[in-house]
Length: 246
Image (cartoon, rainbow, N blue to C red; front, side, top):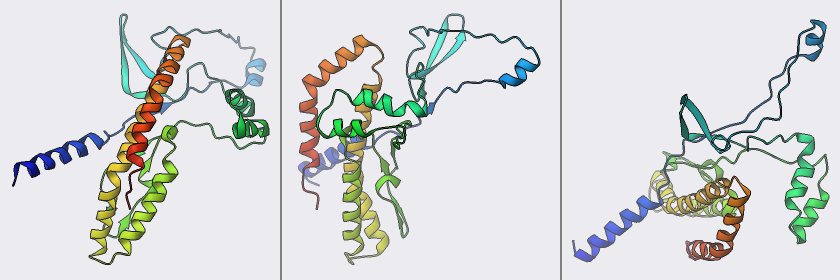
């Protein structure tokens, strides 16, 4: 093999390795209040004790679950995370007003959506659960695509676009009739994996950066960083995603 071809092959292997996302073993938890039956407590004349307000120390007020292993030693979990801030107390009947408050800085059609929200609005509040299925996405004559194969954080707004591309490439390969269907489905997986892995890795890291902000000071720093670097960040992703793939 010529030296140039060897170099090209090595570069391709390195790029594929960089684009292969690590398996995400993260688990997300929420806190739920534990209470008894107040009528039962009153009838039995039990003493009820309430504590509050409770202020968490800085080393606990974070996304990672913290476990104490002694009087002076704690460990931060790399996979166990809180799905929401520990001081969050969001109730379903408050979703509309909470969402309105968060959308208030925006205008245009976002302001129209905010104005339309009320107690009957169907608002979904749940953890973001990114997922990238390991390659290949087919076994025999069974194949996966769209959210069944990859679920991205919303930060690049590419979820629907990648699902549409999956459908186009899958249909094209299935209709090609240039070999066994199993081989064509494998070809579909090969064509789609690297591109989807790029979107997943890019958006996932952006989500982690965003969720690492815990204090007003960090929020100011994050806004300055985004103002300085977001245009270049988006331009880089656009150059890759705007390349012709068909």
